[in-house]
Length: 626
Image (tube, rainbow, N blue to C red; front, side, top):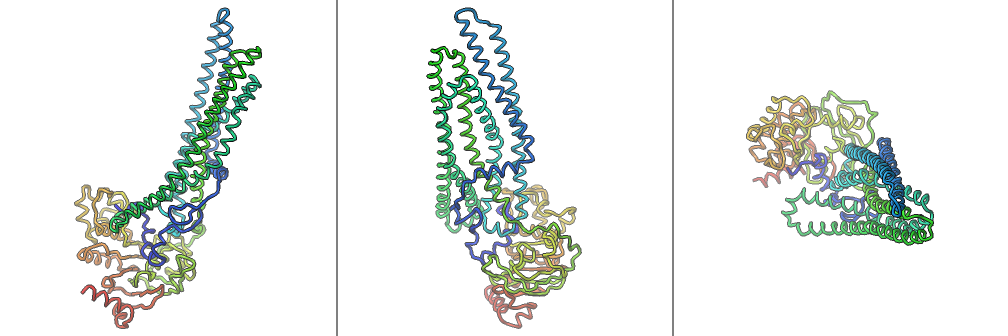
């Protein structure tokens, strides 16, 4: 199903918007965090600290569990740091026994104590991993929930200017990156810091000369790591943004695959993909290369520390300042000291990528929302259907007004047809009536109540819609027909599907009304349209919008649907957008739009008698059909 997972409101405004503000309006416009043409990413500053500060604030509800996990990690690490001291004792006992007898009981007792220490350390580390494995999905679940709720509060203007793929990338790739880091890298970071500080302390307690030797050899690693981190963060930011751009391009090309093939656009789309992919490859290569340098660098520094400790330790043993056991103990501490340096390098690489991902997620969550309507208490429950447009002005862009001064009174129960050339503003009028967009000036009234005093949900409840672009989701036929309406009976379903001529076809499906509509279900464009019309009949709202509802069906089916829609429009105020004027001849009122203004109104016969634009438009269609 080609239209699956596409917002009906989004598709509803495309046709008129493309004509009114140009085909290029589908490209993302410059806005916060997204600038320039697709594939070119706006430069953003390094905001590693700010992104993580926001992440910590966001994860505050999970902080108690996180603190417990981190405490377990620190305790486990501290216990493991006691181990080398016991190994030193064992080494000294064995060394002393070389010239005499080995005290096996003392060795056994020390080994048993060491085993208990490592067992407790394992329990602490397991507890820490178990807690973080619970906390990380909880935070990612909350993020996805917040983004979904945010999407419902966003104005349609945002989606006009932003590729769907970029939004999907934030919900999937970016949040997956955050979850992965919270689950693994944060715990590793805390453990590494505790292990690093603890090993330094134990080294100084054991022998300060060897401690200074090991730290001095490793100091260069810290300096290089900080330089590399600063340079690589910018490339991580670019990588996440180019990933969003390529997802947007892929989603667009696959959604319009038939058009790409029909217009032989394969070569151009491939070149565009290659250009975006090249940007992604370059940023990924630079970020991965720079972060990848850190681990081998830390390994080299660690090995350098081993060499320095053995060299200085040999001199101290020769001078009888320390024993062989101290050297063995110290080599373990050096390993524990350099190991967290390598882990810190890995953790910081992951945290850099996560900072870039979190910045994109929070950027979306910070986008401007629709005005808060929680304080609105006025509602329309019982509707007659009177509609009035009072000097309405509107433009999708501030510098271009489309609807200039639109005023009309529509009586309850009237069937109103809106006609005019492409780009006249027909669908825009309906968009404003549904409050998909807010007016620049003027007001719209339903039963004398300004719709801006009602909540958007209340306004939407007053309408049922049939769009030119059909929209069905992956679910059963029954679920698609019922959609969000509750308490629909089988009799109501059958009555609606019989009325639009689709009942027999549904019964030919494997499971009838319980057949799942997915990519395997073969439905024609006309059959999809029949289902959406049946959905509107089941919704049974007091106001009706029909936007080229029969454009995808054959003539015989159109007559069946037209008869069903005549029954559907009876007794309710209806707005019909049509290009085929023969389908709206029986309308109570026809509004003729041109360039955002009403240039004629009346019944079909009255407008033909007047001559002018409508008569010319109708006669031209008649001549073409003849």
